[in-house]
Image 1 (cartoon, helix red, strand yellow):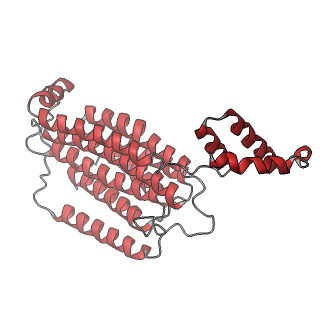
Image 2 (cartoon, chains in turn blue, red; image 1 turned 135 degrees about the horizontal axis):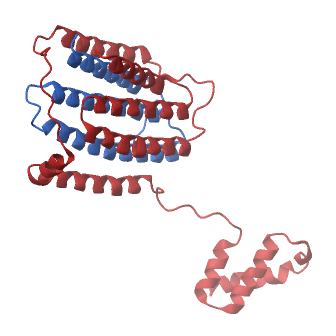
Image 3 (cartoon, chains in turn blue, green; image 1 turned 30 degrees about the horizontal axis):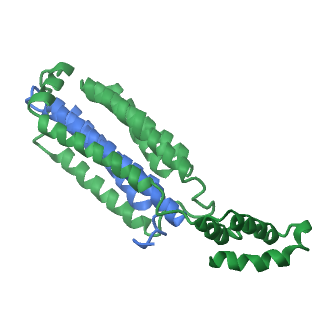
Length: 103
Length: 220
């Protein structure tokens, strides 16, 4: 197993853990944590491919990860604001109890 | 496979597993912080210094703190006896396991992943800034716009929904009615009516004349 495969396997494992957390947990905050883990797994893939690709001179991999981090930060802010609004409305952060879109 | 990579991979994956499986939400957030730190160390290991430090700044410095704030603001939401996982958890776990198995199988069987390591090419911060200001300037501006919109949107979403209900205090309608007609005497009468409504023991005897005055004042 060469280093690139190691990084890709770790990234796949992180993605799987994040997906399992987002799909199985009841708490909305843990769902968001799972989504963050999946985004980070994708970032790790980008960096690994950038480092071990035949043409590492191109900085596109690094730049793409920087943009991805920025978009993920915006996503986290809006997601947590949504969770707080849902908590204020439904008095719970359990996603299985939030089953209507208008209160 | 260097030992540093094995240690970092173990740290990252175990803390990620803890972040989605622990019961205490604060422990989950702390485990997530360890995951982010392990990923930053992996980026440094891959010679992507700027991304590693950006990861520390943005994820550990901002996102983890934001998650801790959200946990503290929604505290007490989980009753103790309820299961952590949803009713169809086996379905979600199965989907995640299948996704991981497919990805791992493809990675391990792929012939396109070259075993030789290409020569190291450091990308300096100067080069990144240069690229961001020349070739990627339009995506940079769009990202700035997105972050601004997300900031405003997050504040609007998390703001109080609608005007708050006024607290029901006895005599509040009479107080507002007397305030609109601007008569000092009416205001005084309303205040005395309030005192009567509140059931003050001394004013019980003088209740009837004030009550007779009051409806006329409201009508004017």
